Amino acid sequence: MSAVVIAGTNSGAGKTTVSMAIMAALAKHHKVQPFKVGPDYIDPAFHSYITKRSCRNLDSWMVQEKYLKYLYLKNNNDADISIIEGVMGLFDGAEIGSDIGSTAKIAKILSLPVILVVNAQGISQSVAAIVKGYADFDKDLNLKAVIFNNVSGEKHYQLLKEAVEKYSNVKALGYLTKSQEVMLPERHLGLVPAIEQGQLNNIINKLAYLAEQTIDLNGIKALAKKAKPIKAEFINIEKITDLNLALAYDKAFNFYYQDNLDLLQELGVNIIKFSPLTDKCLPIEANMVMFGGGFPEVFAAELESNKAMLTDIKNKLSLGLPYVAECGGLMYLCNSITTLQDKKHSMVAWFNSDAVMTKRLQRFGYATLTNLSSNIYGDENHTTKVHEFHRSKLLPNTETKVFSLQKIRKQQVIKEWTCGLSKLNGVGSYAHLHYYANLSFPQNLVKSVNNYLKKGRKND
Image (cartoon, rainbow, N blue to C red; front, side, top):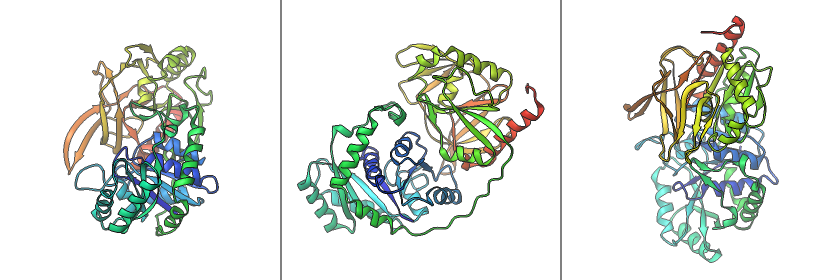
């Protein structure tokens, strides 16, 4: 099974641009399965758009090794080649002294060769020390090649290539020059999502062209073929019942792990997408509704103007419709969203809090989540691993919370807080869940909705 990891020396080295360029070039003639290391939602959307295949996240902090192997093999069994984009720097993970959560950990779990992306602007022979240092840092890692970013031209590349191949066993497989034509716009949580970019095809075509000109695509394919075969335990997911899930999906809400959605379908859930921006009501056949993360603050005016949808959602939730909301979805269910421009926009007003955007990051990173009381995800004290990343807060912060979160490093709790609101048959919180972190959470979700439907009445 052909596969290769594209890692970076650090965030900003260019691994996303290089990964997209390689995917775009290879996808012209091959079935390319994209993966992304870590909990990110934005980069995977670009990968999915380029390859026309759903990108999958590989996160060794949230998901156990046996599930990672299973999801990896399950999702690329019909692909010609898999491209796995890393996260941050190659060895950056959840904590110092451990490789959990890092790109290197995923490469080792899946026995994959690694290509290192190095920002070569303003450097020549010294690049050999960087590459050799990365290659020697972990002898269990199969770092085999390097691609340079921000190269001034062919002469510069030849200097870099000669230096690296003289002082290390790492092979140079090409480069990209700095080009304004392929610069992707950014905002407060990273790149502007693919779903919002109207000129994306032009950028992708340009990236593919650049890769074809200056990256050794045949060399990448040859290296990918050297990926060692691995085995995985089959994970049997038993269907629980037939349900219809209304899934908020548009420019404002699109942060979902595809493996989560696939798992819900295996449990018996039929997914019906709807748009809080443009539709006037929830799908009439919906037994439950899910509001994922995204950028509701960017589209707050449009969301506010869709009064029919706001009213319908509040009415349906008041009648007992089960629901879950994450991050941006939680903000949408509050009384209002106040933007960074200090403009306040009315929202669903299900939760009696106001979401206020902040210039400073409020939460970022992994945490262990525990149910403080029984809710749609299960009984009190049930735990799972989650991720938070947001620049907003709820005011007033006085309502009773349903989750306790702990940041644990080196087996010590270094930070603890509560989050999550619950009302009638659902919860909303800033925490992003990967369902394979604890399968009982999605199973309990489906069971809770099924129990509600059996009762046929509101659960106060």
